[in-house]
Length: 593
Ligand code: F6R
Image 1 (cartoon, protein in one colour):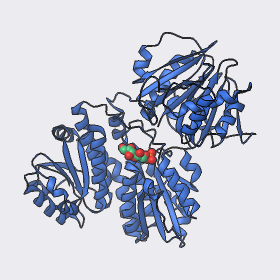
Image 2 (tube, rainbow, N blue to C red; image 1 turned 90 degrees about the horizontal axis):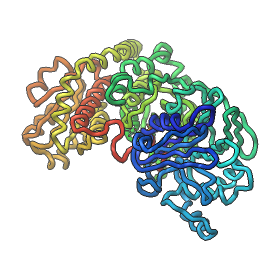
Image 3 (cartoon, rainbow, N blue to C red; image 1 turned 60 degrees about the horizontal axis):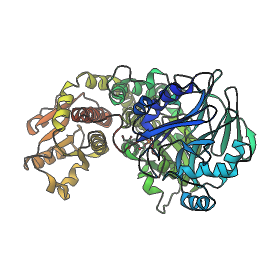
Image 4 (cartoon, protein in one colour; image 1 turned 180 degrees about the horizontal axis):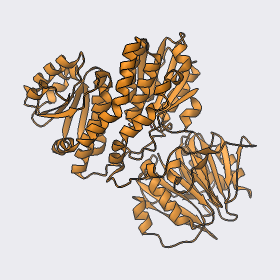
């Protein structure tokens, strides 16, 4: 949720920290701050965006510093609650991502011992604990302090005196970036790509000491070595490159993303899931995810059941963690773009502890989920900066097509037909993008309303749920995704001429019933926008507006339909003038339960 950055090296730290903070802003953006280390520690922090913080800074030549962008969990967004936090003596500064669950008890205890707290945050107890245990070695004090902490953390600390950064992680992402005469610490690689693509991912329990020349990492008091890895993303991928918003750029990247995900997997489908395809020992698949990734899981359920003929449960990770469940001979698959979503990590751990074989479908190499799961399937979508997931969703869907094909119990010619259609998908999506002006107009039309329904059936029901989520999160129009057949069972009461319905069609066995549902909706004077395959002359006569979708096989229609709905949401939000890449109250990666 929060973004962390640390720099130590031979260049002025302030502009580098500001630059990295801007790139981290998608992780949280209600307040931000930095601390620079010279003879003493200077802290600059406030509520608001990095650009505002930057305006208040004067030139500073210190070469060591830490920074933070915040998504508030404990204490409202404010200058006082913003990080970095200082100890009483102002000698130690700290930035933190995560949640200290026992902070109230620790705070009471530290207050009794004479520590004075200035913020409402859980983070501040960590810096006071470090102060309490400090006996001349910052890393040792950090280790002792963290021994008292329950919860999750990634921290970067610095202290007056010899220039170094001390970093530590437990269940929150943190990596060290290796430069030439300079080193970095960051909560994700995209933040430092302009400076280095060589990184070391920290493991839970690691405590590292970073100087401009070297890094040392210890775990449980013993020095450990961690592999240096190359980040598989380019600088360009992490920039807007002329687009007005990251979201629009990421929508436009989708033809290439589909190709990337297919490449290497499609020509050799068997290796995608070698054991699983051959393993008769699996009785059911359990799909676990949150938000958009959960919607991908719902499409995945449909595909695996249809093609692999295996029983599939798709569960919200946040719910799965809190009920008793029977899992025998189960293959659990976590779906998570970031690989850091707390609920999904917990769910994967639980499934593992219940004896399941585990896989994670993720976009982030080295993420926490990849360390929990037995295997990882990388969707290769490149960095996704916009808070609203777009290209990662499409890549997750492609991953499920591949998985279902790898495992398919269908005849060779059906399999080959589907593979051929998959290869055509990037062109279909490109065609849709090329003709997006009509969708832009409809997005602007939708922006006039305060409520909307999205309906679909079969494999396009999750597309309806995702379309509604996308619209509400960036345009703040209240939107509800609903099974087309369910509308009559209650929600119909809300239909009126001021509540448009977006109906998602596909030329499959649900089509005729969807047309009937549309007719019923029209009797209430409700405006209907339909997504329909090019050439469909029937739907055209029934609805107010049509978004024409380049034809593909119904099984692949969720991909093209979803891209159309992403554009619809984008243009509605743009017309309303909202901050599309950073919607209010949200953050890219939800690392708290
Ligand atoms: C919505 C969105 C979220 C995420 C959810 C899970 O646009 O992005 O709903 O899908 O927070 O995130 P990951 O996939 O990183 O686990």
